[in-house]
Image (cartoon, rainbow, N blue to C red; front, side):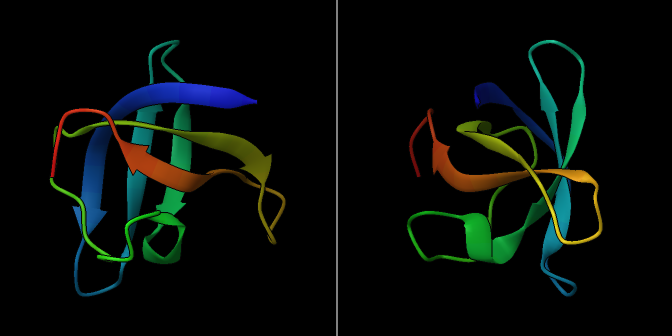
Length: 70
């Protein structure tokens, strides 16, 4: 399922964080999901991606794309 939201947490050293969707759901984000290959995303960036269940059974976001530029 495609979702849109805002990056509300991201730790560059660990390479993970969180996206809060427009519906208020919090989804795990890992840097390998960032579609442009940069492995980094700014806090507050507007993003979209596919909601899926991760390896640990938690909701996560994959194939992340930025909606508000680089």
